[in-house]
Length: 68
Image (cartoon, rainbow, N blue to C red; front, side, top):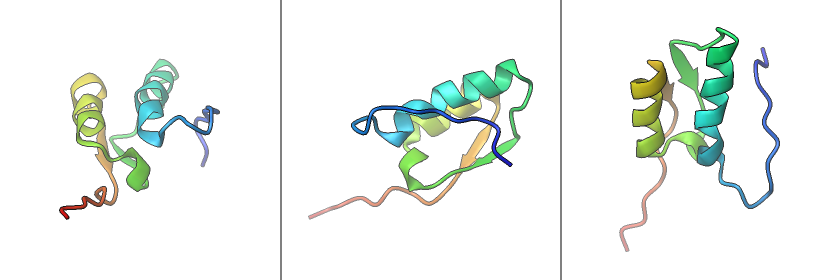
């Protein structure tokens, strides 16, 4: 089920749109308890913000980190 669509410039990173998605879903009373996302949305600041501002647990694969 699609509950929100956000169109952005190609240079906008996925994680930057997550707060807006949650805000729009909250306005329409459609916030999920758990939001399943792909790796583009799993930055730590946005995971924390989703919990703090909307009580939404964002679940998805962690971003890969290069250590070398």
